[in-house]
Amino acid sequence: MIESSPTPQEAQAALAEASSKAAQVRRADREFSWFLLIVAALYVAVGAIFSVAGRRGSPLALVMLALVVIGFVVGVVWIFMRLRAYSRGGFLFYMFAIAGFNVWNAIVVGVSIGTRYWASTQPTYHLAVSVSIGVIPLILAAILIRRR
Image (cartoon, rainbow, N blue to C red; front, side):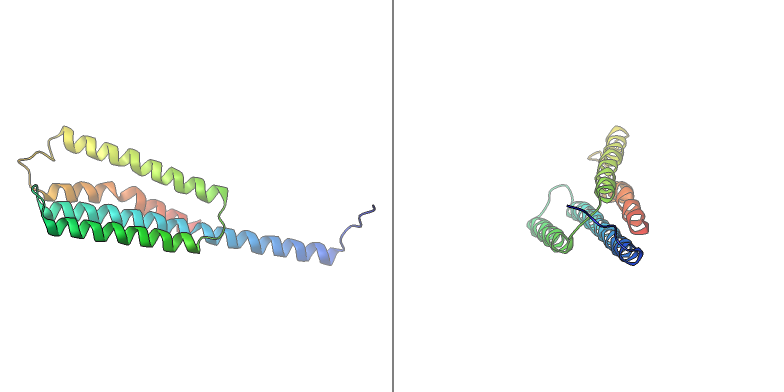
């Protein structure tokens, strides 16, 4: 079978369509920033609940925690339903952002425990301060994904 070469107009149209599809995939990669922001919101909300509830906890804190987790699941499912396609680079950036958050968070927790910043004699708002510092990589990664 003999294949014919596309005309210049057909080739130009195919390149334009490929460029359009690539732009759509790059826009879809921005949805990962919403995943990161939802994880950050969950992290901050849980830290705030534990900071306010105190060391002994309360039934209201458990209800609030359940509502936050339900909201997290609903948000992730909603974004997942919107995510049609994504690039390998966008997914890798997202995964490295989550890994970076875990490393940073381990450092923050380690320093907080090692310096007795979280000791039982310290106020409970110290947890909220550590959470505020720990969430920084998630917010930065969400901003960077939006700018890609």
